[in-house]
Image (cartoon, rainbow, N blue to C red; front, top):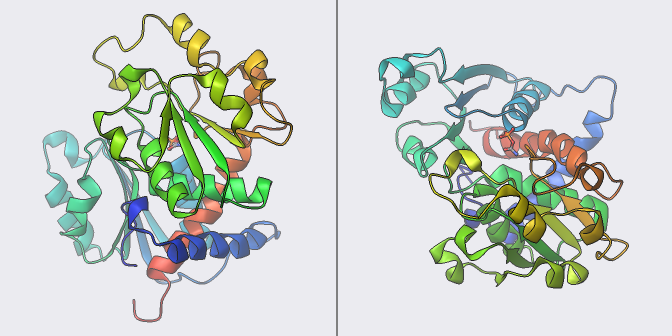
Length: 304
Ligand code: CP
């Protein structure tokens, strides 16, 4: 494995290796001194062309806990604002000797293009509406931590599937790992290609909830919407929001997830988001260990 660009590129064994490595590394995070020397002398560049809180911070923490040198690049304040292309930015990074480049970009496919221009490993931290593989890995890790398995789990992914790179990566990874995924959304928020995805589709959240072990709520990505995809925020919430009454339809062991950032009161109520059966805060913590595992497996070898 040289790059981590799509969750669909991972075999079952590769995905499980990342999750198992993350489990071992999680023990380091419990120690008072959290650092390991594993990536000493390696350079990790975080290249963020789009805003991020969780992914950017956790990739930085992950690289630092493995003792890598970390260079943080954000498009704001860089020469990108003067029109510098992704390729020229990549060649600048190449000259700095990056062993790994973590990239978030608004254009689907940007990490794939970058991989043609740099010698180091490329890790996709979210590209447009395409994929967010480390989010799917940390979600799978969080499911296994809470429920003890992934194989056979019934997972509902609910909301703005159309604009969600998280949904696509989760469908690809969870199907590889043996979970049964159902996407739940209004027809306007489903991509045309969804019929080719390895999952079921439903428009009826109330019917899906009682059968689900995991309910993953997605943010309504208003910033990517240039048209009206639903009548009003209130109507969306009424049909597809997870509030107290809908939460009561879940079985006792079912968990609620959200990749963040949340629109509290729209796709998820504050009461549900903060309930003991929500894994939202755990997901953020698990993001550090899963990203440590990905960096370690990609650039931690002897021959780097
Ligand atoms: N889940 C996620 O990607 O969050 P950020 O946009 O804050 O990185």
